[in-house]
Image 1 (tube, rainbow, N blue to C red):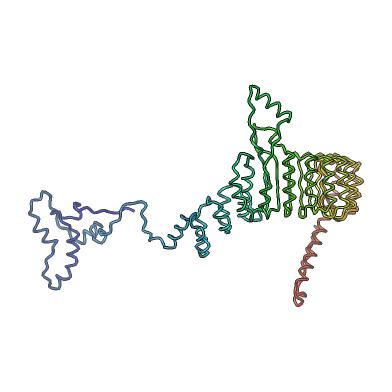
Image 2: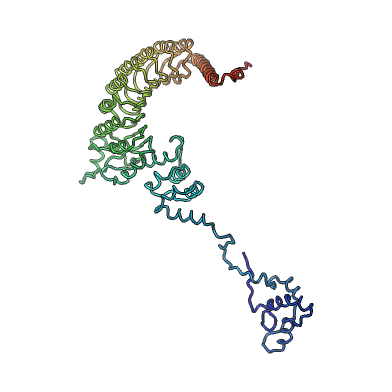
Length: 534
């Protein structure tokens, strides 16, 4: 805003004698009506001009200007404008003084760390304003049990991480923040080096909000570098031979003891992005690690999902783990994929299935299970009544192992999905698969990809599918079954999917019919989709 600042020496506002002309004009304006009514007061503007024009002041005299024309030509001549003087400050605003409510909110936000309990006493509309303005860096010991609003935790998550997929955390931003915060602390924890105070302070605050813990890496302790002139050669030789001393990783006993609501535990014993610092020791799952973890999982009675993948889990460690969780009351999902489990470990897993386990899903993908291990699992499938999903992809079952699994599926009545892809079986297994497809009425999905079934095996599977009405998904990629067999099988799968969809529609219509009151039942007409054939 630009303002005109009047100076007393400006000729536009003074007469030739240096006196204030604006005051004279103002006074002459006020005295005008009185002079017309008979007042004898002379005009000060005229007397000042005539009485003081003859003084030798050294400055030229100015001719008198009528008041009206001076105001029209020069806005500064108006005394009402000259009396309003504002400083030339670019940050100046004519806004009114802030409301008392805004000042109070600003004070609460500024001193929130020292007086956070006042948040519970605020009305909802003012509480939301405070939560919108407080910092996301406030310690968790203040906000953990105080702030329940999702908008604040939404801001905290987005301020800390670039990618925030809240759908993986049940749509709860607060749960997402506490789970990822604890995950980051565990992943960066170095045994015998990291100060445990941060972990000990975070655990009681996170206990009520953490339901899933997904740890992508676990760091081993820092070893002291050996001294000597041939250190580099010795280090390379030890790394190649795998003779490095064993190191124990993070101990989950105090963590699982505090997390009373934990339902899912995903672990990987290894280091992410190690780059040129690769050593075998960084990816070694020791016997002590296995024993501690098995005891923790066994003590966590409310755990439902347990994943231990990419951790070099061998047969001995698998037997130790299974022996501790044989009687686990609530474990429904077990994922031991991408490890080194062979037949001895598979026999232990078969014993787990034979026992009183509640497993619904078992993933043994990418291991080293062969014929004996497949036979042990097949024997367990004949007695198990809870398992619905079994993944044996990327093992080495062969024809004999796959045949044993197929014979077991003929007697199983609960399994709905099985994956036998990349298991090195061929046409010799096709007749057993045909029997499974014809007799089993609960199986809905089969993955037989990357096995050399051949054209004869494809025809046998096609013959089995012609009498099947339940299988809706079958993967036959890279099996050399032939285009004709694959096309016919796909048509049958489409028929089964359509039949399943129609049955679901009828079931839903029946449930709606039962919920309707008797007086409105006659007006309800279930929607039956029509199929137009062109």
